[in-house]
Image (tube, rainbow, N blue to C red):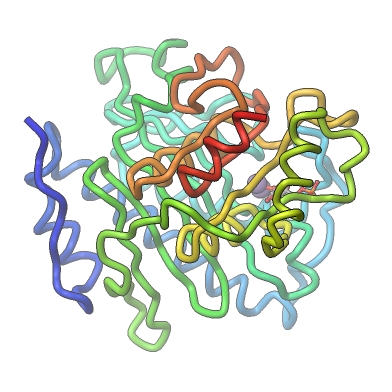
Length: 327
Ligand code: AHG
Ligand code: MN
Ligand code: MN
């Protein structure tokens, strides 16, 4: 049976909101609630570090690359440690898939959930004081708690997510998440150290006028994408591209728009990672009435083959993604 969407007064504290909505979860409600609290707690620590980044020695590169070949920033590594620790101590997660680790990490063997995370998204924007984010997906493990983690626990389709969301470290810090009953956004009040419901039951406009794509790579886009970008220009749409997926996605969620990261000559399968970037945002987009596709099929239906697999990504207002697909 379709459960009703969550209705809560604006200003509810996140903890209270999570608690009063835990009846919506089909099983193990207290554990998923705790997991969301652990993620929120880690995000507060990361937020503190992001805000101080210019003052202490945590800007700039580590001098290392991650598994995707990207140069690791100090804050990437720090954020990864913060989330890993919070999830380990929290006890509800059995395994963690992260952009910053080549293989998945075993956390608590008794835990019932598998987490996929991009601890810090938009790392090229850290040093220039531009919005960055965190992206997370939550899955239920398939194997019995206490048993060794199995491949089917790790490589689950996006449609199996039980919760997903992101934190945006922007002009204010926001946590936006879904447990499959709509999308709610919470704004962080730093002096109280608490998130409060500010954006209940978020809906993305069915149509929009913003297109977000890195046009520097235009020459190597597939023909259909070139034509769609030209179509946006012919329509006098507004081009907006921050270069932090979370920030670009969030703006388009509020205002209506499409975010595109297609296949390019450099990245034959696109740049963005299915497991810890696209799936979470696809789940949020669909729950807000939007759409997410790789250009041909629904992102949430893609069978993952590897942890760090990439996919072309078209996400945002439903009619815009439909139109892009038609090219
Ligand atoms: P990350 O910092 O986690 O590696 O992700 C960066 C991603 C994404 O945030 C952004 O939308 C995209 O890379 C920007 O890529 P381009 O610089 O190629 O446009
Ligand atoms: Mn990222
Ligand atoms: Mn990242």
